[in-house]
Image (tube, rainbow, N blue to C red; front, side, top):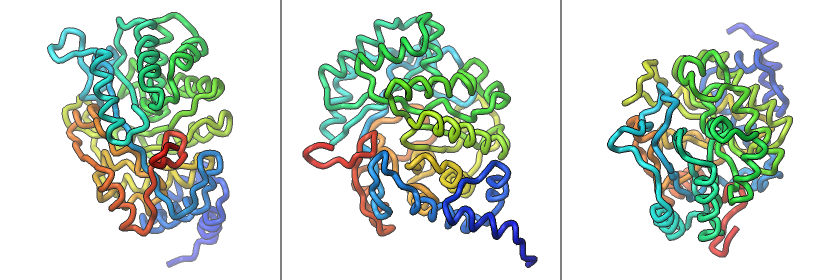
Length: 367
């Protein structure tokens, strides 16, 4: 083997915790998987989560929450989505307050602290409908954080309500919204977005929502859905845009990447497996040096790869996912209990701890 001094220098740079650029990320991507994983695990150990807990290297966290999809009616028809329906479909729905109450009561009974509430882009739901729902939830269940509405939904609201993002997010926050999920990130490269979801928010729109939310005091997560029509360079460009936004607004609490799930969707693309998932998660940990928490995506990868991901840069197993309706429609139906979470974490020698959306550890008496 020929000695490569420049590669050796890059590896030392990563080991020391220094920031890399896109060209260096592309070079790291081609490392043997185990070597890239070791570097990502090193960066996990170096990561200081002072802003969101600072739990140290031996704790792996998870959250108990429920995905609630308030409607499946959507008019953007993403090619990768098997969940959406039109208003005319027999199984189209809009959730009622009573149905929401039952879901939240079940979540609380299971020790849950949050609902992740997202829906389709319903063309006819009014601003007041959303505000009434938020106010109802927050009044009846003040202990539950409402982690709701992806950036693409807010862009949809801006078009339908004819209000600025600042006005809409401020109104939603006052009504009870606690934080924003990073759904709809897909790949933050417009050439890719125009191929897979041409009617959905473009890259600058997605980032603008996050910027406004962070300035208004709402934290959010960031995501990436990969393994379809994008290139490796597109994935790295996505990471760069997320990192640049975090440098600016410092509001992302975590990053979650997952792979495209093809079943029952209209998007015809070669999917990728567990090795490619681990490679991208490891690279994400190294590149996103300003985001303290990386979640393992066991929902799409299964429990075994989800566990292995804890050695490839992840420090969090995400949610036990009491309910999940979107990815499961695309053929992925993995499930996890708190006992499963604890077993997977403890088998690797870590301490499992439940946390809330802000990575504060949860005890029986509260956060």
